[in-house]
Image (cartoon, rainbow, N blue to C red; front, side, top):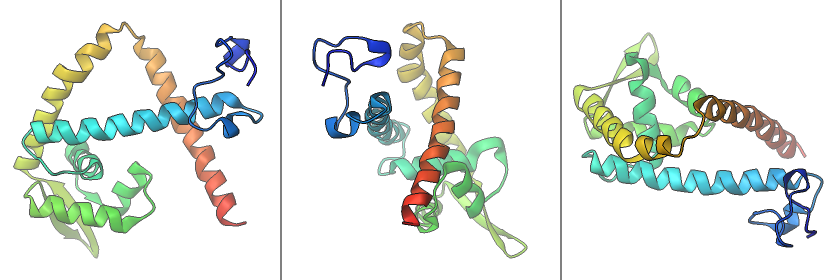
Length: 180
């Protein structure tokens, strides 16, 4: 790798961009490999955080997906269908969400019902209490320290929007690869 492989020709002392696979970063867009590595690190850290925060909130043994599904069911205090949850979380394997819903129902954190022929899920009082405790811990343990970094919240929002947009390109590329 050259000394100027970083963004905008930034030198990195001959090390090159911080990536997990130099062979992928040696293509036309090394910065995308940097983003992929950063997202990988972020996702793994986020998953560890969710599991440990949920345990501290009083619901040990929940996976990151269980946690995401629970918060999605709790969102805006409206019943959700399996399709709603999968769409919001960008999950195409509905069986993994179905399994999470069964675990959450068995734990008493959600209840299921019917709206016509469609199965619907809602948060229970216990589920809402866990979500609120998770929020309290998140504010104290994560939000406070991140705010102390002095990061611009509008810039964080722009970064989130960019990541959501780029995720659409990954989805399209996945469809194209599946058609090959």
